Length: 203
Image (cartoon, rainbow, N blue to C red; front, side):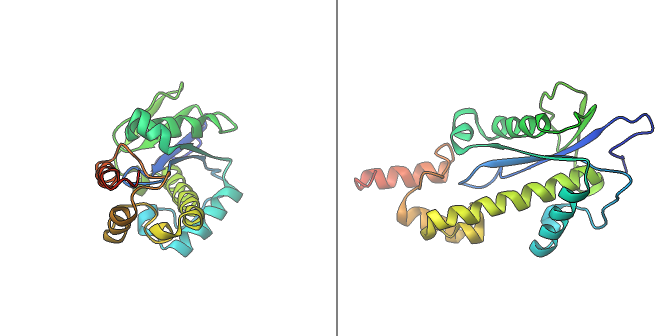
């Protein structure tokens, strides 16, 4: 496994994002520089960890890492740029918020945004690189919290349960109610619901 701090005292950040697939809400990215003197047990792909354990690990990462930074891209930015470019924007914002500034960045996946420092993509890095695993966990917990808060503003959609992903429950609500302001207008199911409700004179 690659370590976040090399023998030459080079700070290495792990970066991951969450929120590519949902029909609503922002994309969030997290960048983490772990402290080798304070190893954290149980890191891994956030999707394979229970919600309760993710929250515990997120708190531990924030307390013990050298630096943790969250970046986000709004629904408006997703619709304006497309979700891939918006996710890269969120990643850059996350890395820019790190102190100390990393010398190298490891990104989960197969595409690397421009960070202004050397970077590499690692497929399934959230399973094999501790710093990326830590980033995936913090990003997931942070975005889930945002969607729970969103559910309080738009209770009819059930965001607290599906977190904006296109579940059957979400699709039914979208078809019945039409999009709310947090839905991504550039996504086909949202466009279809918008068109349907426009025909009815709702929007």
